[in-house]
Length: 223
Image 1 (cartoon, one colour):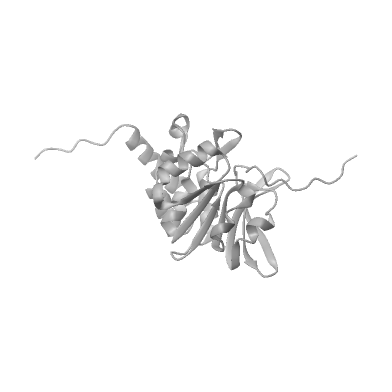
Image 2 (cartoon, rainbow, N blue to C red):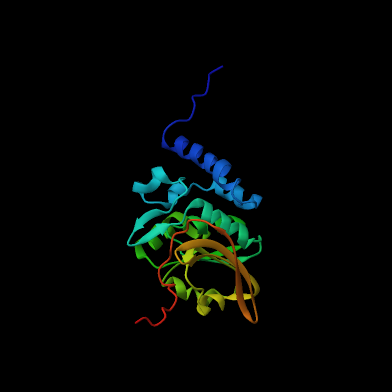
């Protein structure tokens, strides 16, 4: 009988790091939805990063992508998807797609996904990697994609200072929203449900999130 040689090289290294991420980062830190865990076990995060960052794909920190953009840490993305409670019949809007990782995960959980990215190079890379699994839209993050609204779920894969009405209005009444929030320099995971009266977001846990452009809250008058 011929012995099978063990798998080696970058693929094996990334696979081992992905397994370690699931065991030591996700399952111990509140990523409790088994479907989210299964998706993050299956999807190679390195495929959605530039070559220069792939060796760091499974470190729990934001990774610089250029032009002021960063990839959200895997724990933050996992917590956001857990709070979003995506159902197999849901239509999902992902804001801050970056290279497409969160959108790829959401596509394993939902019926359809639209992802928005403002950076043209990142949007093009995400479109190439995702193929037909996700509808990629290049444009301002805060504008969303009203043409395909309403959505059952809004996931903002990063931290914002305020949730604009332009995005909230694209979620149907009773739809769910999960986002990172910036509060006096601290980033937190938050979620809520859109009602006819608006959206109330509840914060859950402090965690590092990549801060997204275009969501700054108005500054008060200063002398």
